[in-house]
Length: 413
Image 1: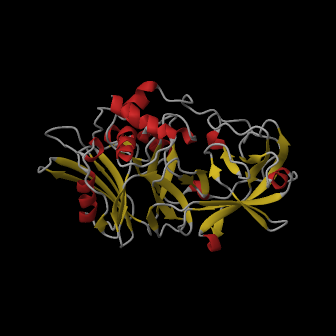
Image 2 (image 1 turned 45 degrees about the horizontal axis):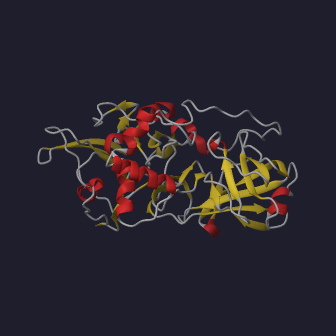
Image 3 (image 1 turned 30 degrees about the vertical axis):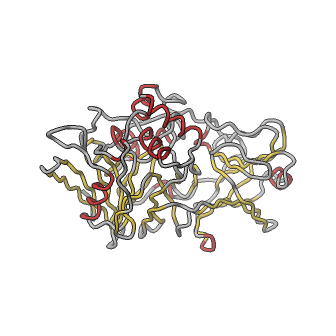
């Protein structure tokens, strides 16, 4: 399909299984990227729509979804950390040079540096609720209309002025920021096309956050614990680690045969994007997670990660669906993993110095919350968010309230 990129269809009558495998060599002229539905942390969008919008060679569905349509795990795109995770999970990431892929539990670190003083401050969360006393939280334009920023806070609005660069000492990336406004007041600032950092009024860092002046220079950075990572998408569970199957066979519904989507990496520098159709007797019945892990081993993977599955499982090539989704049609999802031709245009430097005039908020192309029928199909699917959350609850894993509600709703249905 492109230099170093192949698409293979495997039809195995022993299942029966119908498997789609895309193998991409990282050193060739194609680029792995990630995409949010609607370019926002709310609403749902089909994989083929995201693929066509980005003119991708290949796309597969990505992370599990919450009721609002946002992913569950950490999400980063083009050198920007857009979301810290809701729950303990795993991520697939690639570095800027497209020479290394990482799969595992990320160790998230985010920071704000004031070059005028040399002081550095930890950012506790990104688009993930209000900061506690003494903490700094960040909010980006992707959370517009979804995240409620704290009142009675000190805030600063920042605009990125340069492409992200490596911070080797912290295994991360960072970018220069222009301070457009800062204030301490009852109502927090809105991103208005930039990013907001916010901390409770009167806390130990409120003077620093509220003390920035218009035109000041700041630096924001982040790390997942893997050197040079620019893009990252979440999933669960890990299927293969160090060339061995790492997922166990359990008795709950998530672990029986279902359609599956996954991503893997090989020691010789390939990334594998894989779907297995399921719930279609006589055509393809799907796989258990351990069977899916065995498939990745047979394809040469030494690491592999399970992504959202069930009715969400979709692969597109140049915008056209090539597998058979089990719902009989394509299900809108939270995010996608893409393979783009050539370089990623999103990683280019900003074209101009941002204007001090706030830009208008961009309205998502879908409503702030998805139609209930979309969420109903996701929360009741044993291989999607509902089934995963229920499985985690069964194993005694403490869940955030929203995932616990998804698990309980799955069980009621």
